[in-house]
Amino acid sequence: MALLQSPAFIYFLFGIASGLGLKLRKRLEQRGCMLAALYNYFFVIGLVMVLIFHFIFKPFHFAWLMMGIFAVYSLEIYDFIAAVFQYIRQVIQNIHYYMLLRSNNSFSQYEHKTKNQGNERTKTHKEYDWQDYKQQQSTTGQSDSRTHEQKKQQQSKQQSHSQQEQANSQQTEMQGERRLRLQYQHLLNLSGDHWTALALEKAWKKKRSELHPDRHQSKPAAVIAQKTLEFQKCQEAYAYLKLHIPSR
Image (cartoon, rainbow, N blue to C red):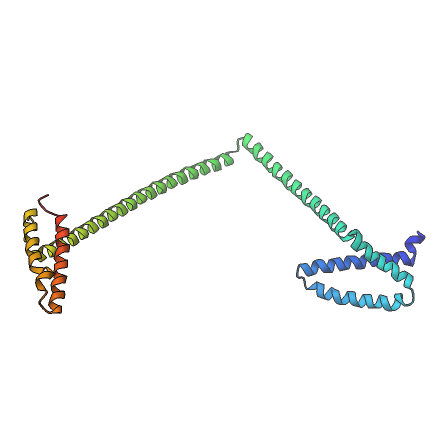
């Protein structure tokens, strides 16, 4: 008892309290709490008072104070106390959860008892619940079938639209090929859609003899260039029409 009442032990406890306060301030700063800044002022004021009144007059007591602070940081007393409080909190939560389970079990026992007694009110409510469930299931089935029909209609519309686009593109391509063929036929003086390979050869020989660059060497350069361009176009027309003869 004498040790517990001695000033050295009291200052040692004060050092432990100060160390715990420093740990608490560190935790508050980590959490961004405004109390950490306020705690700094109180701690600095208290430390200055200890330095003035005890370090100068009673350095032995101040040594015990520093030993208490050192004990908190070296032995991690704060973490131990925090762990104890966390354990106590967990025990309280478990007790509360156990009480909730017991209350739920009592309710389930009461419900089982009323069911065995043949409570008409409970039976009526269950019939209503079954009717609601059946109506809900029928409504859900109708909505599912309606959704399925809508999906089928949408898929058929998309398919018909894609087929229409494909047909349009094919028709456009055929029109473009026909227009190009007619242009080439016009260059070689071929008319109609039933010309033969022999007619194509005759028309090409005639155009080649007329437009060949060797036949226009004595003419001006502009005329030679124009005839050469016409000859190249007719040569291209002959190569294309040779692959698209209608009689084949």
